[in-house]
Image (cartoon, rainbow, N blue to C red; front, side):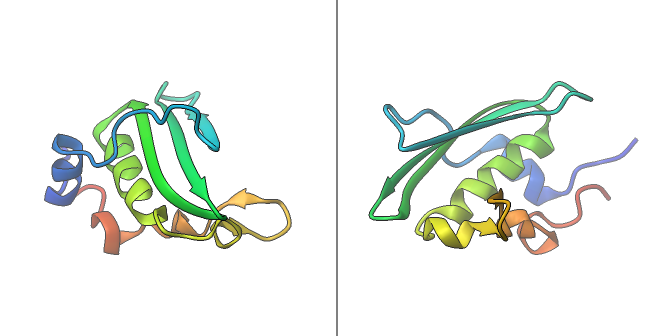
Length: 106
């Protein structure tokens, strides 16, 4: 059986920024049709900068850990710097790599 690494376990057990923001300036959701995981993201934006980010997730440990790291990483970032290219596709924080969570499984 595969085992999750300690960084993922820690973010799963103690996720950062769980919750909703009332009347958010930004909000989005992603659903994984394969496994059924769902994550909603709420943003408080002031003067073009992410001042707060929260999430609600119904998913596996990796999904929750990723949302925890993601919300931490985008706080304080300017909105235009979060998007890639002309498609406005989110984001340079798909740089959630081994430096953030380590290898997913070991």
